[in-house]
Structures are given as structure tokens and as C-alpha cells.
Amino acid sequence: MRIIHTSDWHLGQIWNGRSRKTESAAFLNWLLELLKSQSVDVLIAAGDIFDTGTPAPDTQTLYYRFLQQVSSVCRTTVIIAGNHDSPSFLDAPKILLRELNIYVVGVAGQPEEEIIVVNDSNQEPMMIIAAVPFLRDRDIRIIGAGESAEEKENQSIAGIRRHYKQVCDTAEVIRCKMERAIPLVVTGHLFVAGGKTSEKVREIHVGTLGQLGNDIFPNEIDYLALGHLHIPQTVAHQETRRYSGSPIPMSFDEAGQEKIVLQIDFDGRTPIIQPIPVPVFSKIVRIEGNLEEIREKLTDPCFSDDKPETAVEPEIFVEVIYTGTQPEPDLIRKINDIVSETKAKIDIVRIRNSRIITAVPIQTSASTPEKLEDLNPVIIFERLLENVQKIRGIDINERKNEWMNAYKEILDECLNAQHNNG
Ligand SMILES: [Mn+2]
Image 1 (tube, helix red, strand yellow):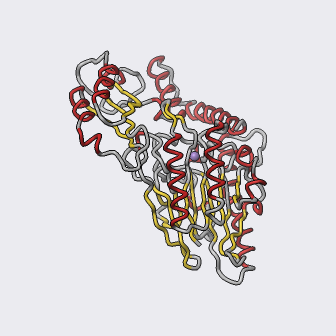
Image 2: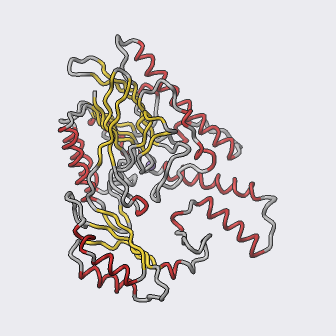
Image 3: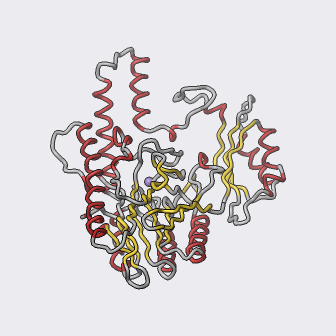
């Protein structure tokens, strides 16, 4: 049995006003060819299939066309919801997709509903997959009245742990009835403590949920296929517990990173894991310097010629960070003029004038100006409280924890409301 594990496609993403549709389509075509050429049995997409809960019609067409094609290539396809997906939207065509051997788990339900037994061509069971989606509070937590924020967080962690234990126990009962030792593959879409994040992934859970440990996953799991983090990585240095990362870069922080999908073969219950690099469809490049340095870099023939073979348009997305000492009020026009002289199909996505940014009040160090979008809401609220202390001379320390917890509680409720709305 051979698996391909991928996640975080974020279909339909609008990034700095740009559609990523051509890149997404190019990736899905490449993936189909890979599944064919490698004779893959099972495809697992571990959440954040779409970027929003209400994808546009052309994004849905891209998805359904892919599913129709994949159904004639793979024995089984498993799709789970991530935090960006609407669970009910993914679940809606579930019964129909089941006919194509595509299993979708949007809303977390009873453990047995998440268990899939994959058979070989002789109808012999070869693998058990527990398809656990992103676990929303309302699916796993018994909500009690008058709980503190901390109690709620502890309940959420206990709920996630309980859910994984229940599905693994259910899978184990099935496995015990089998004549041979078949592997148990489990999915998830969540942040496990210690993971490396990028610009695009902001904390979904605030407070202690960010500290969800590797120990919430039972030991009987032979391979854990996770989604949510865009940088491919192992969980707590365990080779058999992995994030595949996103197939296309989702932010300038991911510029230059190699994107992969994971291929897993099994020797009995032991996974043999091989990362397969995803080609670059549009490069993402960050250029820094004064105007002359920016001109040199953009017009350097190596820069344009270094485009990937698999390129789609635009070939290169560029972020320009102006660090010159002179004020450049006409910066955008000047950079566009430079771009019009180059051969490559360049799209200047973002121009940051660090001379202006350094004047923005929220910042900690003069050398690395911060962007508001890099900060999580809790940090911003904490800074605000500190400013109140500094500017108004009010001593916040006595009630700071109380206010921080109250804010986290409000934030949590807002995020849950967002999830409930899709
Ligand atoms: Mn996610």
C-alpha cells in the first residue's frame, strides 16, 4: 500500500489581491501525474482544502474536477476539513463522493464514522485510516456554565485527547480481528507544541491550546498525517508523525522553501517515508535595498532567467522592501518603471517602504520593523495594556491577568462563532 500525504492546498486563496488559481491548478495536475506514475493507492489531504468556507464557483469546479480524475487513479482518497474549511460544505456531497471511493470527513462525529478500512484488489483489508478532521470546540467539549477561560481550555485539550483515544480504540478493535498486522494511519489538522510556523498560519487557539502536546496521540498510530503548518516537519522529532506542509508557498516567509508531498510505503506496520519535491510554479522572491540596489537585482538577467521550467504566470511574485536612507515618495511608480524594463513576467505584490514603516508606533526594534499582520491579537492586546500603563500612568499589573483572560475568552468566542458560520 502506497500513500501520498498532502495538506493545506488553500484553493481559492486571494493573496495580496492576487488569485493563486493557475498555481493551484498546476499543482493538482502535477499531483494527478504523480499519483499515476507512482501507482499510489491512497491519497490523504489533511485539511485546509479551501482557503474559505464559501469557495467561489470556479474554485469548486477545480476541486470537483480533480476529485473526478483522482477517483480513476487512486483506490481511496481521504479528505478532512481544516480550520479554514466549512465542515458542512465539505460534507454536503459526501454520499455522492463515497461512490467514487472518496471519503470526506468535515464535521467530527462518532469514532466509527471516521474509520476507513482500505482493501486491496482481492478485497483483503490492507490498512485502517482514522480520518480525524480539525476538531472544533462544539464537537468535542461538553460546555458547562460559568467556566473560567482556563477550565474551558483544559476541557478542549481533554476533548481532543478523548477523541483521538476513541478513534484509535475503535480502530484497534477492528485491527485485532484481522489475520495479519495492518497499519493504522491517523489524520489531524491542528497545531502541536514546538511546531515551526510561517506568516500565513496564525494561532487558531489562544492560551494553553497552543501547548497541545505530542502525547495526545495514542501510541498505536503507525503513521500520523497532519495538516495546518505550512512548513514540512516532523512532530517532536518522531519520523512517523508529520506535517506535509503546503504545496505552494502562501507567504513571503515561505519564499525559497522547498515544498513537498510525502510518499509512504509500509513494510508490515512500519512506514517507509519519502519526501517528493513539488515543482515551483510561481517563484516568490523578497528584494531589499535602496533604489539602485533594487534596480540592479530586478534587472539582473540571472534573476529573470532563473525562472522555473514549470512556471505559470506570473513567473515571479516579488516583495520589495525599500531600505534606502532617502525618502522616496514616488517609490511605487519608480519600481513599476524598472519592472517594465525587465523580460520576466514579474508581479510586484507588495512594496514596503521601511522609512515609512519605522514611523508606525507598534514596533519593538528599529532594525526589524513589525507588521501588524505578523502579531497575534493577544500580543497586540497586551501591548495596548502596556501602553495604557505608560501613557496614562495607570498600574495594570494587579488586574492584567484578569483582563488578558477576559480578552482571550472573547477572542475564543469570536473564533468559534466564525467557525460555526463556516
Ligand atoms: Mn489550517
